[in-house]
Image (cartoon, one colour):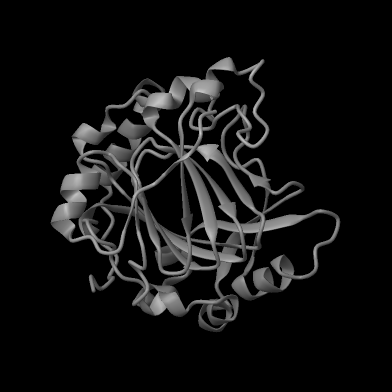
Length: 280
C-alpha cells in the first residue's frame, strides 16, 4: 500500500463550511476538540456505570482483537451476550484471561441508554431530522474494528482514550477486494499483514489516517472504508444520518442497492422522531 495521507484537521467548522467543503465533496475531516465542551466529554467508564449501569446492552466478545462480520452470511461473527452495562464494565475491564476480547459496539443510545442522551449535542452539519442511529462504542484497548464501509454519513465523536482510523476512498473499492457475499461491505484483505500475492491491487490502494483523542470528531463520508484501532480504553458515540440522493452514487452502489432501497422505504413508511438532543 502507499504511504498514508493524514486526514485534514480543523479546530472549528461552521455549518456552512462543513456543508461546502466536506459533506458536498464527500471528504473526511477531523474537527479537533469539536465535542470538548459537551457534557459527554466528562464520560469515563465509571461515569457511564453511574449514569446507566442498570441498562441492558448487547455486548460482543471474540477470541481475537478483530471485530467484524461473518464473511459468508453477514451479521455478527462474534459471540453476543446481553448484560447490564455495569456487568459489562466488570467483565470487559477485568484482567484478561484465555485471550477473550470484549467490545460494546453500536449500542443504540436512544433505545438502550437513554440516560446518556442529555450529555450529547448535535454535531456540526448534521440535520437532526435525518439521523439514522446514535450509538455508543465502548471497550478496552487493542480492539480493532475490521475494514468495512457504511452507507450513511458518519460522525465518530470520541470522548475518552485514543483511537487511530485508517480510511480508503470509495475509488479504491476494487483494490480492497470486498466479499461477494452478504458481508459485501467488508474487505477480504488484512491491511495490517497485506498479502500482495493474493490481493495484488491492494498495493496501489491509498490509505488516509487519523488519530483522535477526547473531544475530537471524525467525519466519515458514505462508502468510505475504515478500520478502527482502540489505542487505549475507548468511549465514542457515532451519529449515522441518511445520505442525500447525490451521495448514494459510488462504486459500491450495485452491491448495496437492495439494502439502500429497503432502508429508504423503512424511513419513509416508519419515520423515527428526531432525538431530543440540544444543538449547542
